[in-house]
Length: 218
Image (cartoon, rainbow, N blue to C red; front, side, top):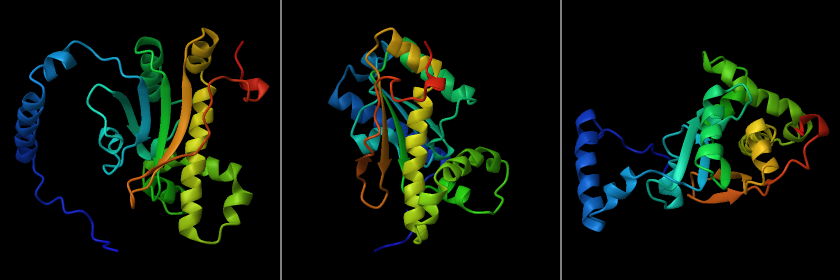
């Protein structure tokens, strides 16, 4: 297997602008009304909460077009109730755009998750990764039983996604949408960089019945 890092030496400030011109030309060649349609507004059915990793672009790996996925990304696709950025995106997506699906998407080999597994200080981000360390704490017995470090990291990636799904379900934004009869489902996926394939973790939910009673809003 080729373990070389993807060569990005050809990417520059100027090349991005040139790439934009090529994007415009290609899009108009395929559909002369492409940008007119985009300018009229958006109504994506999906909110994607993913990792900021440059190798996990939502549209490319799902073969979708601009306007079809509303995207929020952060380090290690963490979902916590104190993140006003994420909550603002969620509120807009659910209550204004009326998305039908919110998907938390992690990826195997995530640097943030692996950093959270270690005892090394990275910097300011250590405070953010604390949330993932808490996920490890919740599942210590299962994770410590996995002797292979790579497999343990992959499992923590999955558990971090599952925790994100649960945390979304606990928000008043999502629960009020369910209470009002809105068709909204929360899902958890993991993307494999080595194969390009997405795995559905089967942790979906469309109501708050499986939540501990203390987290259910009336």
